[in-house]
Image 1 (cartoon, rainbow over the protein chains, first blue to last red):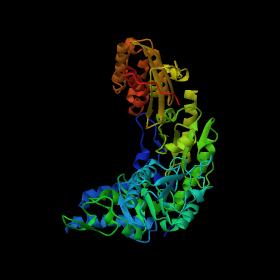
Image 2: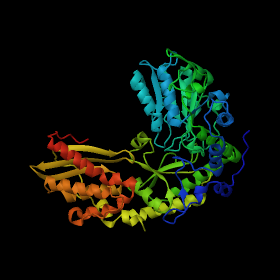
Image 3: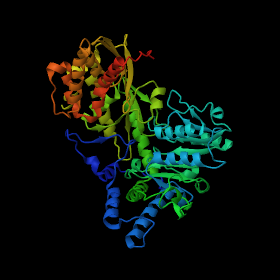
Image 4: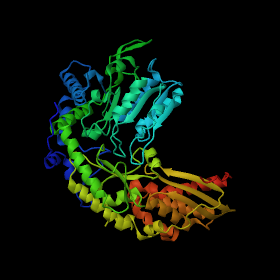
Length: 418
Length: 151
């Protein structure tokens, strides 16, 4: 299913992304290095969206007319594409949401309203990590506040990795759920899933994995991860905004209660009570983001065509090159692992005392788009004693020439504020 | 280069050599943050009757936010409250002008250098951080709020 070790033709790929040819208002060609925030979209995805609206637009799972059936087939076809992409045992384990935040909030709310043995209550502990995106912190803080459960977390080592040295004290018999990020959006760290899953399974805790920064960049196999839930979002992997995924093990999706109620998620409704549709529809109340799901299906087809292993290998090369070139810039400190091992292609750094906002502004003037700030991972900035970072993040269409442009830009920033 | 309209020499000078920085005695203290970028300021105001005798501050953030606090200190310290409030309102109007106003140099002095910043929506909040903190602290001082211990 997955092609072996193909190389990737970056020039050909770039031609598929109209925006990458853009000349900015200041006359500079776009150098897009903000892929961890969102990816650009290839014309194959844009064409799928247009075709959906021009030819097939209808609401799904209702109506017997031709367009309704076509729209339903396209929407459910996207679910098949996702299931295959993540090696899910069943298509019914793929729940469409609007983004990864919604997926994670959905799990937290399922567990908040669940019966035993899943119920999170005042005797329970919830475990996360210090490198989570706010979307994998706040839902658990809310759940802890509402149930009285205790929130615990893994700290970080100085080189930007999880400190698992106290794993047996952090994950205990009281732990009901362990939720952690597979790839950090700010540090770029690829986390050691197996060690955490092993301990969680030993104590009978559920495992939730935030794969938002993993799904776009590497082979994602939910069976190999041995997690209970995996969340990710479409827009970081060439799809439109407004479509996310929650994969969950089938028996959990069957046992756990719905969160949002409404159309589509029911079996029968009376004024007194309702029964619910089987998963995944139980968790998809209301008209779903249909075109966006179709776009995600097209994005997956595109990614499969290139090959996720080839994309991962390309990004690994770019990451190695970028780290080696960043090391040449005086006063530059990488926040996160400084080698490409167990590391993805999002690289955060500080540049002397120059505030990231100023770094980003001067880079923008040269056409270079980076992200500045705390990247929705403020605890990481606190951990490393910095107010914010500048982050360059790469994808399948990124080139060494773009890395070179970044380095030249950073030298210019230093000269400007020197 | 367009950037020069944002990063005027006056702004870079204030950034590199801030005026009045450091926390001193005050009648009220506030801590304001810009959550999108992590700029932070702790600011105290000291009043003597109707006169603003000191604005002291500590903060971290980009050149725009830090220079703006320095300019604020220059402009407002020693002024009567009514005049200080007029200057604050003039600066607010300039920053909300999306590059349409040049600012009255008689009133705003060095602060007119921020006119270019008003063209960058993401940076307007940086420029306004200390000014909003000052407005808040002054209101608290007038209400007789006790000064907080600095962290």
